[in-house]
Length: 136
Length: 98
Image 1: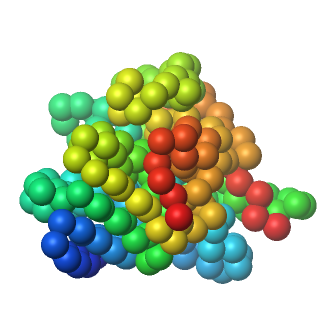
Image 2: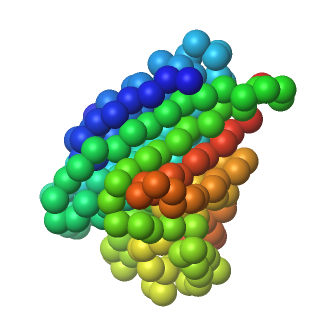
């Protein structure tokens, strides 16, 4: 398991992405799966940066683990901010015509659609959000 | 992300390289805001684009709303990762993808 603790800011999304990508490279993760994981990081870490400690900022910890067969990567995001379970958010309405489409709510929906598993728990004063993606 | 602009009359092509995400979407938004006036044929070339997140989708949605009123918008060279995003979000229903 590899772990990075970093200030939860939008500027640090790239640092988190690079950290995870380094591990994915070691695992010879296919590019298209890496792109999906990177996009999920963008959604989840930007949410933490914007809302967890609002209006202040605070630290977040990101862990990368590899699990069994078939090989999967698990990325865990932890923060000490306001308790918030993004998975309770209702999915956006998708079938609407262009004019009625709204801009919000797509991020967490995309994470749920592109990852194999997404889970949330609040434990010991921490938001813990975990994504899992099969890479083998 | 880098954006390359190519204008010919009222046709405009923007080629994107890199990632269209939280930190780069404002760049595309600004490029479009500056350039869309009078454009009747907008092409977005995604050949060099790795992935897109919801922040990028928001910019594409507002660009599509503008272009629907004044002409056409076509997205070219969409990779499978980005195509999946367009499909699961229903964006493929109203975007023109070639």
